[in-house]
Image 1: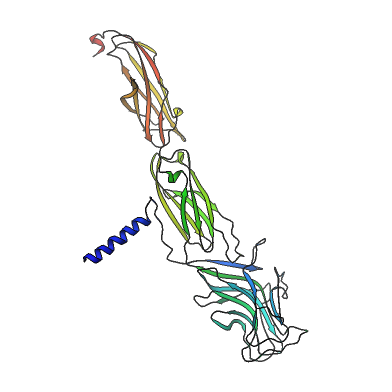
Image 2: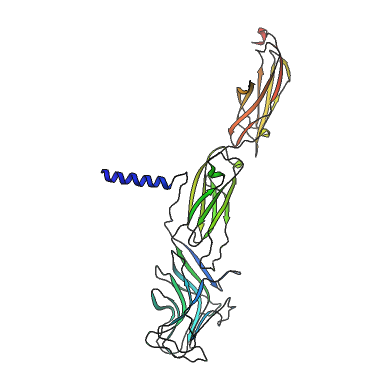
Amino acid sequence: MNATSLGRRRLRILALSVVMGGGALAVPAPSEAGTYEALSCDQAPPGGADDAWEPFGAAPATRLYRECPSGANPGRGMVAAHFSRTNNGQKSGWRFVAPPHTSLSQIKATINGRRYGDENLGSGLYSPETSPTVRHGFDPGGGGDRAYGPPPGEEPVTVGLPNGTRELAAAVFCGPSRGCIGDPGSAEVDVHLTGARVTVVDELAPTLDLRGGTVLADERQSGPADVVFNARDNVGIREARLSIDGEQTDRLEFACDYSRRVPCADQSERKLSFDSRGLANGPHVARVEVIDAAGNQVGQERKLMVGNRAGATGVSFRVSKGKVRNGKRVMFTGSVSGKQGPMNRLLVALQAKVGRKWVTFRTVRTDERGIFGARYRFTRTFRTRTYSFRARVSAQAGVEADSNSGRVRVRGGWVEKRYLT
């Protein structure tokens, strides 16, 4: 590798380090594009906006109207009808325009139309930006009266679209060769789109910005914890998830209306949360993911440290005698419990207070019931003194706690040799 290539490689590594700084790891855009279906008229959900299709090209010669849902009436739906003289090449009807950075791959539609008289009139589905040729219906020419279906209530037709198609129209139109002359009192040609499911292809992943919360505070997590985020996308955000060490702990589902051209909205200052008391003390990895309307997702990770103290109720402690003579024994006993009950096989430090500090003089382990115990003989108390003792559990299995303290008053004196055997 020459010096120039090495320098470029270092620059790429440096740029990647800058992008991934702050402990967050961004996931690249998905390799496979997501899809969703835009629903209209009879296919739209109850209460939906149902505004994904818009009228276009209305002229005095054309009547455009919308009556959805159709109620299985073939005269309703999204309708375009031609009545009188129309200039050559003129089109009118309803169109669906793909959201930014998306394309259309197919349509499943209940659509029917007809033509009476002038053979220069056309009707049906076509892609305006690629070709005026009808993909379902009929082009101008080919004789006079024509019709196509199916009517409402019957199986829809499926029409595939070329790669990169961004616009789809259900329209009536006059051929390019000459103007169309119709009867002002009756429709010469019409189209009725009573239900549509348009497949939208989205290759753009969402963007995610972690904004705040305890997870971003770079401090030990204890008790309830959270992360605040913003997320944006060309078709909106459908869902957000939080997982700790790969296990999902919280989820938000946002309201989306797939009868709109852009079905979901961007999200700002949203919060995902978890209870760190359900985790073992120590390091963990939190991951936030957001998913757009088409199923594309992106995520970021943060390392965090959990340190919860279970409190005095986590460790009980008792001293068998409150007063003894130097050379005699006492028994220290107690138990350790967590959220789920007794904690077994935990190390417990027995401590005595020396000045202002607690000093460990023995360690013991809890049994299967969470109980511990140890004997202790006083041999070096030559004048009467009162000692303080306690038990301590340090950062094990989600428990970190100090017990209550116990006192023993020891009457001083010399210990005979028989006590030392």
